[in-house]
Image (cartoon, rainbow, N blue to C red; front, side, top):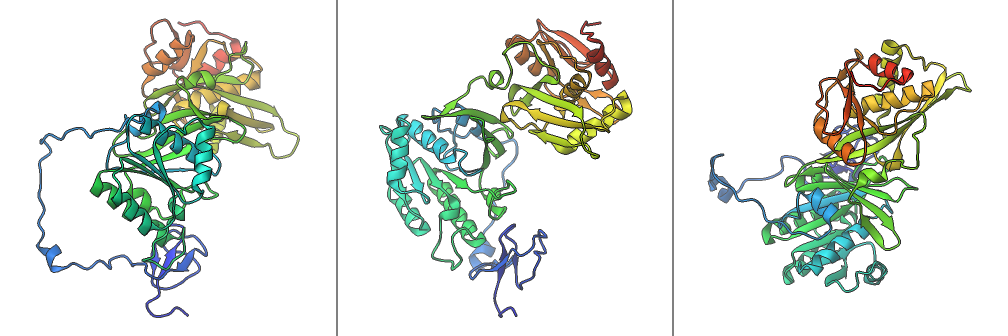
Length: 457
C-alpha cells in the first residue's frame, strides 16, 4: 500500500503520480513508476506575494533584435549543425549509442575551441582525468588549454563553474550527475531533471555554453524525462552504424539554427575527421553500376547529399516472402511495393525484397520514393540504371510522381559530381549541363527502366 505523501515518478516519461500502479497513466509504459522522495507533482508550484506583484514587460514584433553572437569552435561540421557556432548562454544536449564517439567528438570540439582562445572545461562523470588526458594525447590534442575534472556532484560542479570564468563547458554525462537535494539515485528521472535544470539556469545566468551528453535507451530514444529536451536550446543525435567508419551528427532541435542539419565525420585512429564532401563517400565509384542500385539526390538540412540505394529482389525460399530494409522506413517500403504491384504490374508476392542505404546513412524524406522504386525495378528486371543518372521524387498512392523541395539544389549537387542525367517529377527545371527525364506517373519511369530508354523528350 502506498504511504501518505509518497510520490512516484515514471522512469520513461517523467510523469509524477501520487500512487503506484503497474502502468504509467501518462505514457502507458509498464513497471516504470518508482518512488522518489523529493519529486514535485504537477501544479505544486505556489505563488508568493512577490510573484503576484511582478508585472510583464511586453514588446512588439517590429522591434529590432541583434543576432546572437557565436563561438566558432573550428570544427566546421559541428559549427554547421549548431547554426554557425555555439551561442553563449545556450544549452546543447547530444545523445548517441554507447561507443559511437560522443566523448571523442566533444573533446575535439573543446580542444579546437581552446586553441582559438575560448575558455573550455571538460567535466567527466564516467572517466577519470587520466583517461581523458590519455585519449587527448592519442588524438594529438594534449597542447590544447582545456581544463579537465572528474566529478559527479552537482553542487561541486556548480561551485567550480562559478569560481572560474568559462565560455564552453562539456558535461559527460548528465545521467551520472546527482544532487544532494534529492534522495533518488543518479540517473533517475528526478536527478536528471534537477541536474539539467540547474545547469541550464547557470548557463543562462552566466552566459556560458553548456553541452550535456545524454544516454539512449535500447529503443534508440533519449533516456530520462522528455522535459530535459524542452529545457535545452538544441538537441543533437550522434549516429553511426557498426561496421562503418562514418558518423552523422544530426540536429533534431535548434533554437539558433536549422533543424535536420547534419555534420559528417569519419572515425579513425586519431579520432574523428571531418568529411567536407559526404556525397563522394556514399557513392560507388568503382565502375559500372550494378542492377538494383540507384543514386538518390537527397537534402539533409541545408546540404544536398547523394547516396546510393541498393535493392535485391530474389525468389522466396519460404511460404512467406521476407521484407528487410536498412536505413529507410519499413512502412514506406511496403507502400512502394504496393504501388508497384497495383499501378505498374510488378509482382513481389513470391519474392524476397531487401533494401539498403549504402554507407550507413539513414534517410527519411519522401523524395527517396522514386529512387527506391527505381532500384527495386532495376533488380526485378536485372537492368542497370545509367552510371551518370540520379533519381528523386515522391510517389503518391495513385502512382503519380509528385514534385519535392529544392529540386534545383539536388541537380546542381549531382552536376558537380559528374552526373549528367536526372529522373524525377515532370515539372522540374533541369540544372545547367544536365539532361532531365521527367515522369508524370511511376509507370512511365518503370517502363523507361525496363526498355533502357533514357532519352529526353
